[in-house]
Image (cartoon, rainbow, N blue to C red; front, side, top):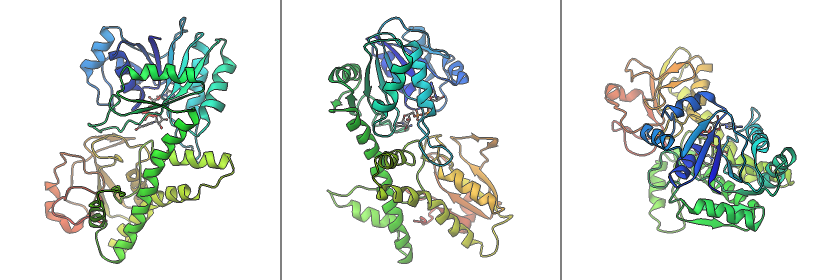
Length: 406
Ligand SMILES: NC(=O)c1ccc[n+]([C@@H]2O[C@H](COP(=O)([O-])OP(=O)(O)OC[C@H]3O[C@@H](n4cnc5c(N)ncnc54)[C@H](O)[C@@H]3O)[C@@H](O)[C@H]2O)c1
């Protein structure tokens, strides 16, 4: 199968579409965001760091096209789902985008095609949600289904699509082989597992592993505070053990589309099967409550009221050197501070704009400066005269000689 349709052109779908088109596939990228499609056609990719030249060249060669409407396909093709699987307002799995994508595929899919999902979801999604939905509304026969969870780490320059091993699990052995054949073209290592459920569970385990360990470090960090010791120094010391320990850093919480979200899909799988995943749920709430913990500390700095105080936050993306603000605890902290009447501005040269607000340059006329996500290249010189008004909640290199909060 040489024709590939990618549904959802975000952090996951766009790099995949590019990689497949560079490797001999004829790729159609589809997204419900028509503005995104217009921009991609003009070589503008937004959040993904893909060059305009690459986008324009692949389109000129006709190996990649971007569409706002999926055409009806005539030949068996590969359909890849890379749409969001977020949480709803009650922090439960929200499968509406996945449902829409399945319905779209069912309208266009031809006999003998392969559907692969890269979207992270609860264990059993391929077998009891995606496959039945596509089959129910499609007239095509002999369809194949597989899971191939994406492991991309946006901003990571060492590990990318080609050198990160790809786990693949098909409903049938044949589906698994078809998916493995596809990924083998541009991935160095493809690991076929015995079922889609193994692939789905492994993906959720990977990110829940991070959530649980970050929660543990955050909990021990509160203990370190009472001993007046640095948690970073503790982690540095523990990391000197050459085996059996992995480094995680304390912080204001977890963000992005994966760590705060995927463990909820795992515990949701537990709930569906009458298994209480208490450790997972506790870790989720521990990390979620870090904003309140930090907030209380900031309030305590003012002794009186925080209302009317001017506070500047540095870095509102959840992760250094990315513009990703999804589930960012910085946004939550700003919201909580404003609820208490604080006047909050922020500086983030990568995010630049969020909702109706713009990044503001570093100001020294403030009551408090809070360093959350110090992207490379931020110049803190403007704050060198107000070090007594700064709190550094970040990990990594020392800034202006300040001690870290954790
Ligand atoms: N971002 C990561 O680091 C990462 C890593 C591994 C796995 N994942 C998983 O991959 C999936 C996609 O995540 P992402 O980060 O790329 O999301 P994203 O928000 O960056 O992009 C998703 C895109 O899908 C589009 N979309 C929504 N519904 C659609 C539909 N019905 N049809 C076509 N397009 C649609 C959106 O407009 C958006 O452009 C999620 O399940 C996520 O959990 C993400």
